Image (cartoon, rainbow, N blue to C red; front, top):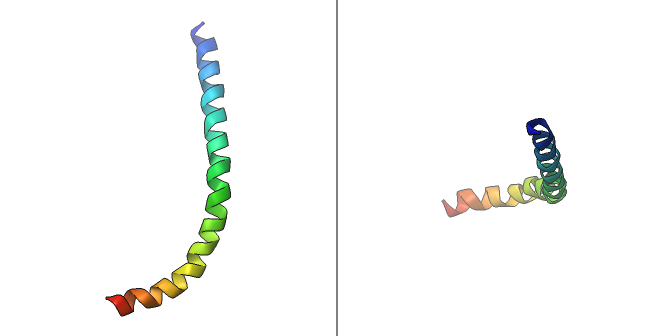
Length: 50
């Protein structure tokens, strides 16, 4: 019984993180690509503001 519960918990825990990873990877992919592009302009503004 304990093993069965562990398998159910593992499956549910794996299913949740897998779905969250997909959602996080989707927004993170475009965000990560924008970060380097936006990082260039902010880099110049950072020293100017400082």
